[in-house]
Length: 636
Image 1 (cartoon, one colour):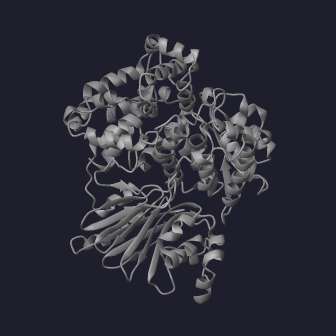
Image 2 (cartoon, helix red, strand yellow):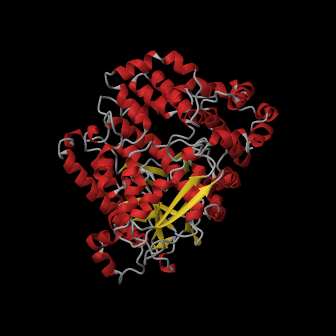
Image 3 (tube, helix red, strand yellow):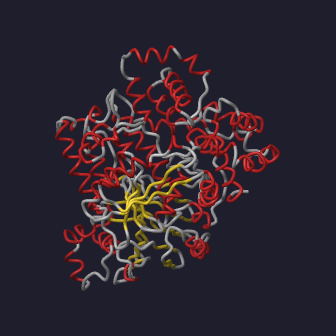
């Protein structure tokens, strides 16, 4: 796990920019605190920061060159099947050069690319972003893993090409820092930036499961090597009971493969089904697995540590609980804001940051249950969409009650007001098409509310036709009554641009690698070859996962509501952070001078936050705080 950066000058106009490699590389220090190095010619610069996981010796250092010094690789990630790939494809190659110099996956990837070019990328199991450079031909191959776990940002012009693992590093390559107001509008709807866009104009993200080939004159190829798709022709391949056994076997293999490490390894344990499954399986392969949980001292509604402890006791793990108060959040909030180099307002990033920070004191690698909700249908919105597609008295009742739900108090902070919030969103969604409903339920703010937040001069610069086109590209998979299409859309939007960004960013802020067995591409492909009824019905979400592992997990895990991994944000913003809101980042005179947001709308939003009916105002306020902090640091 590392950070990579690079620049390719296509002519003399940008050749001087190559010298910026040191500054760009230093911005990735937290991703790779163990070492850093660069490769540089007159036209090309490649930088690498290393977090040593597999083969921690200097023999595995990067940038890595082959024995001929013709080929160079900078690589971020892990290839879990590298030993099998070497045995199957590289025996003659390594024999010819006198053997491998290291025991690293980096050297195997370098050799595969030398021997097979882009063909080998689809063979890789793991997560990665890399740049492979041929000094003789001047050709670069750049790739990103199948589901987009590892970030890859780039800026391409007729004069040069820059890339990096992080925006803060990319901006060191003299890229114009201009906010893309169309993307800002999307961010105000979703609370994150939908890929492949970024908040900076002309900065993009390489699409998940894609590679690029760059030559001396620019882009030569941009192509997918992996695409997640629904596979209805396979829906009847397994009975439900057979599918359970298949899932256990595939998850067991995925977990076992991800246990490889030359540094201490553990697992996050939230008390939910997903992380508990990972711990149950991982415990087969290591005694006294280190497990880590966080709890909430000041709000028991969100605390799930007692369920995590049940799993820890069952599997005799070496369990660590970090119990957090609002003061703990306050002590760490600026650590999160300082590390965020592109606006990202999923508030659960904060507890994940603290969890990663404390976990790093014990291990360098942590397994997690990320991805199960998107792949196997675990969200409340999935249950709502399933219900929406049925003919039922419940749906009729909720639709008829729309005027009442609208006027009742809405808040995520307690059960009753959260129920009214959910009923209102359900009734609102009932009026929309399937595709529009998906987008609305994925959003915190509607199109009109997001527009109202922007200053008229900024709103006039929003490219609404382009935004609609990008939105349609995301929801286009939803075409029929196959519920798997909803999950596929979650893979393309929520998983890629929210969940994986959060995990990568907050773990890398603390120099810890997180591995997600549910996101092995073989598990994902298997899941999308099953009928949706195996995953969700009117009684149960994530049905297959729950049933397959029922005998392995404590019964208490099945008899409780799912709260998710979020913090009690409303009280926190009303109290501890109110000064930051009212006197600094959202202070009225500053808003007016800045000229991005509508000052009156912001003032109304602040009043809403303090009212008895705050609705989702805290989520929008947090999104604005994150943006403003970022804007002051990187743009102003």
